[in-house]
Image (cartoon, rainbow, N blue to C red; front, side, top):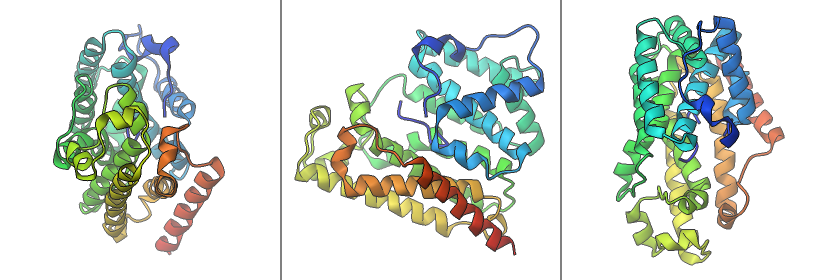
Length: 310
């Protein structure tokens, strides 16, 4: 599947697939060891998100690493495991053990502690798993509303789970998480559209393709024409609308708490700007944002958060 936004980089490959399945180690790892594994996963991902983690206090940073590791490992369970349905069924069972206070997987052990510390609603963990399961049977999305439902599970639910970890207190921050989750996931989809098409997965709504006269097979053959450029311009503007909505919906009392999320937003808006300038780049090496620019985005978000707190 295309990368999860949410919150959402690859940290394991074929030679590490078995780790994606739930294996109950005897005895369960210590809490410090469990968090260390989550932080290892986060570091190995080279994701834009992990740089933003450093904008958080240590306890919240560790909790966010646990949430990220959960998203990463269940995503890879679906994409990399020889028996993805069995792997995800095992993770359903692990979530039940987590709720019962008896998790066994290192990521689940750390996640259980994060949930307890920051009152993370466990329903969002189920929603994330449902989103991963949706990719087991690749489908086409006829309308944007259908795609939006998919994005809710694989990205918005991640943001909603992250809100209490960030320290948000205002219920209005839910609108921020929804808008930003959609923006991030849609940006990932556009960036990865050629790679996903080669794997038989096309996430762009069919109504959009028809609107601009661009065919699904054109994605596979990397056809660059006026229809492609018009399609990308349309998708980019839709995503910009969600980024604007996210920024406009920041609750004043939660502005400082959302500094890490704002760092993510700034990075992904730069990514989207690169795609907008050169739509044909989507058919080449994966479009990215240089590390120095990511660091500048993180710094800008941090400075804005400090100004707000004064």
